[in-house]
Image 1: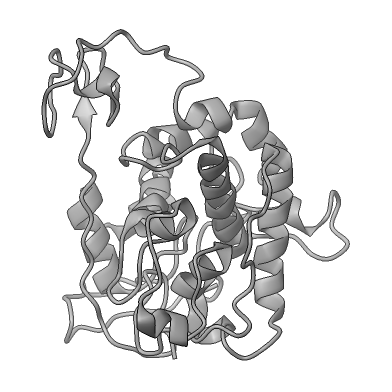
Image 2: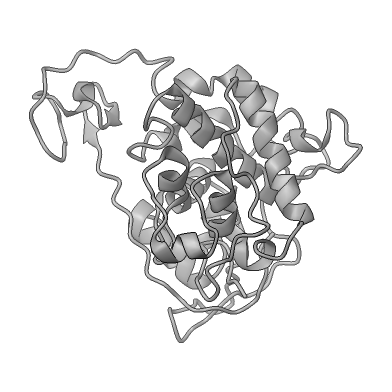
Length: 307
């Protein structure tokens, strides 16, 4: 869950550059970006053929059965997020972001989806050590941050009177300026009606995927890290930062969890990741923990402010 340790604001940039075919499907493949596109960035390519409505892109890896297997207990009566996080909303959100879960070979695609779910399930888990089916089957149990809070820094961005910008949704989006940044990429009233992130499941998933796909200088995006699109700079290498699942933890909450040896929260994130890699039938890759990896210090994550 998000902390309230102060840091500094950084700018966010996202470009979901998609082509939309005449059948209403959007993406970045030749089928989407051919000559019959209704809306596209860049042209050329062969005349598209109608895409199969089912089993394409992310949906070919995360089927509804797999989604339900991963999230066996999300709809338990004890879960505040019961019946909110649904499969169709996830797929609709995934299709809105170019390259999410579709970059690289099958191994890269599966690892990215396993990593995304691992991190967001950790943020919203309702599990415990002896929970039925284990602690990693209780993701997406929570919808809003426990305890709430204003999370308003009005000198950096406006705040609406009486509104609270605490964590909501799969990534637990927090702070007024982060809601405003998400608005620019997704399109909703993040200043006055930010609670829509906890009412509209598609928008909720979009905020999480937006964060995942968005680089936050000096941090890379989780997407680039996990799919091989990022290489450590000299300063990254000196800080022990390497490309692997552990870098997504550093991006999300490195100031609280990385660089100080063993951390139980890091282990929990790793446990989720290994479980979902196993479900998807893909190896874990190297570099899973950030115990000896320096955080980015006063760099702001989309969900919280780091020490």
